Image (cartoon, rainbow, N blue to C red):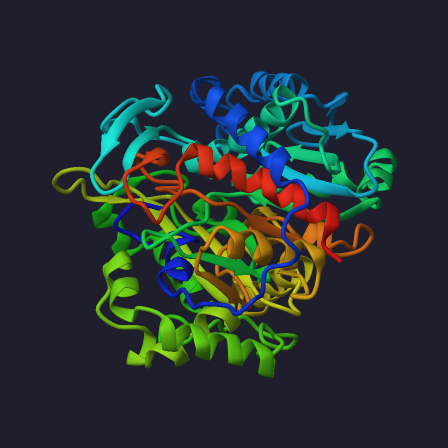
Length: 504
């Protein structure tokens, strides 16, 4: 996701609408918060260095690159922040982390971390992606540029800075913490459920009031969006080959031979064409809409309010588009965004794509795709229907490699984890949005569904952008008075933990 393209945060931030959520009681720990803020400010340089060093210790699950060392480095950060137990959890893929911090408090809050990052092409970056350079970004202030800066090491490190500051101020953490981390979020979390369903981990999570992933959620105008759920992904690859098909060449041959030799590339294109209707966007996989739940009246109400107060032109500009599907009006398009499942082609590769022609008939073609699932679809259902659809249409030779995925997420707006966010944002004077469903995905369904069955959400002040894109950044010193920098982001987590301790 690039700065001039939409990412999973941009559109919702651009469509902010005020939620009239009254703040809960004023914090009884105001004196504590003042002392902690002093500690946050004193520890700012150490906090910046923590983010930079973490970015400089990357792990890329998609490339199986440095994953063990990235896990170990993250475990060290958790120990330094005060977690008494920090354990590596093996899975059938990359290892996870289970950590607990017992503060002797009455309530316990769950925290989700990811320590893997997306792939990089260094030639696309203005500074090396793992240098974690501090630069001045016009309109934003001083930022850290690096892969993982906003997704999610900057916000996660700010959360850890909150724990360091509470301890440095000589104050007591208001809640106990249970933290689970994975190293496969960027490949759709294929083994994360194995971590949370370990008996010891599950028992600890069951004691939690709810779970959050730290974010830096403010848009350019300072607004935040509280999402009540996210779509679920299914990432997969389709491969057509002469070897598997039994037709076409085993490898590339001269293109003149296409007069009497079949093409695996056209085979793949024909298979892809069956996945969507002629309009190019409506999923056509057999039974795909069988379990799709329509928007509720409350969800439509939230979307209508968002459309009324949002900025359609800003949203279009953020994505570089001139119109929505079917040239639909703003509100209808937002309803589509929240309610519709998708089948998207991420990339197509076959044969020669360099300068000039090469006159080859390729023996292999592949496509990278992902689906976004909505309630009440499931990941397992989607995979089974995809395979059955292709087989029914005579494309059983097309290889289907599903690399990861999980179900959609839903959390009640009455849950403590949501109401605590509303209270903290209200105290900070931040315009806030309550929105039914993020069009993007995170593995929150692993928490919200049985056997964990807890509310889960995303929370954080501050700002960053460029997740998955070149020049990803996280704001340290904000030049925008409406947007918090690192200190404000850190204090947001401090206030959230205090609010979770008292919210009724």
